[in-house]
Image (cartoon, rainbow, N blue to C red; front, top):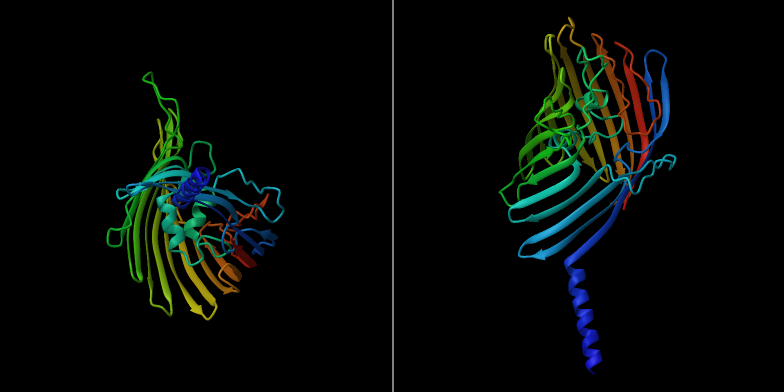
Length: 375
């Protein structure tokens, strides 16, 4: 009898423990036939893995600590399901965080999405995926802006989508629709008091927004130190404002963005290179499907360049949901370039060894036809 009571007590304790903790396996497998062409004779056809949503495999979990506190983790790896060669289930470069949350909000540590990227992807009808990705996002992934000097062709903002070694804080969700976050990415350089100390790799950013009913609007700012030496520094400063409004029959999106490379060199004139971006888009549900459309434009302003390079992009797509987890999709896109711009419809992230290169003042076309399954 006593043994039975002990066994029941152990089982009851185990049941309480399992109720207080949870671990979830999740993922997305997305595959598309994608084609890109440039009006100089180039073309490229690939089997992509992110035409609608980026392929991934992840684990996330929470534990109820009592008193309103909870601990959580999130480990998310990229998948290259086009050939399987880069399926990296233990390379959690998409996200790897541990957190503590409660009535005060959430403190999150690790590699995470940046505040400014959230605006670029949330207020893009195509979610910065596939051939329809807006040019505001492309300006980062294309290698940044030409800074001049330093012997560099371009400066890439490695902290655009995600930043490593971050300390983040998120406001609690019960603020009447207001939300926000701040994030600091540590440079992890060795600092001392004997001379110059590099801060290359440091990221600081924040986002504040309001979402209530059909309206969502957010402002974000960040500074990423991409290059820092005793004789030169390059800071990438990003400021964007995005909004959406859901009328039911149609949801409208808009974003204003500025990306600026601030180049300072000892003994030489400072050089600024910036890109001003604009996006307007819409989605419209039709039965089991969703129509998506967007128009984006970027205009570059580089010191010492007489004509400002300019590009605009039109994208149109349709998603047909076969179920809650499986969807078919198609996207068509066109980019036109002026005054030395050379953008293409290639979005990046498709695990292509040598992606198609743009050609100055030549237009580009692209399409995706694919299937997305989530679990």
